[in-house]
Amino acid sequence: MDDTEIRYFVEAALLAAGRPSSVDQLKALFDDDAAPEKAEIRQALSDLDDEYAPRGLTIGEVASGFRIQIKTSMAERLGKLWKSVRRAIRAHCLRPSHSSRIASR
Image (cartoon, rainbow, N blue to C red; front, side):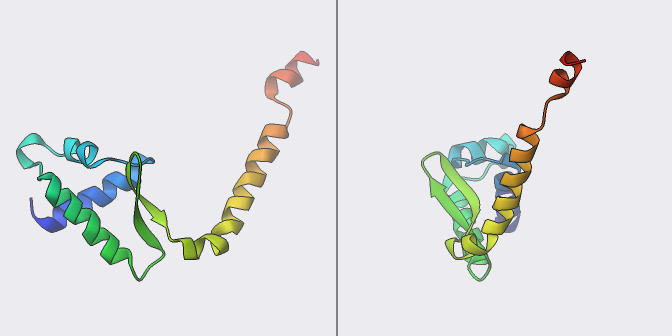
């Protein structure tokens, strides 16, 4: 597997996981016969971070692994998105549930 394939696979895995992934977890996703070395996965993460540099994304490392995240410089402008999501969730949670409407009949 060449460097580009490794990078693309790591990127897809980070997006699909929905949570941080360690180098070992990423390595385990590859077929045994095609699994890259840990150093190659780390290089792919670094290369992705370099590719993201001019954009609003970055590769972040947290205690549990690596994740694709937005840059801090984008957070303020994207805050509007999170506010609308929170409002939608709050509205959904405050709406009477189906079972309570049935019980009141």
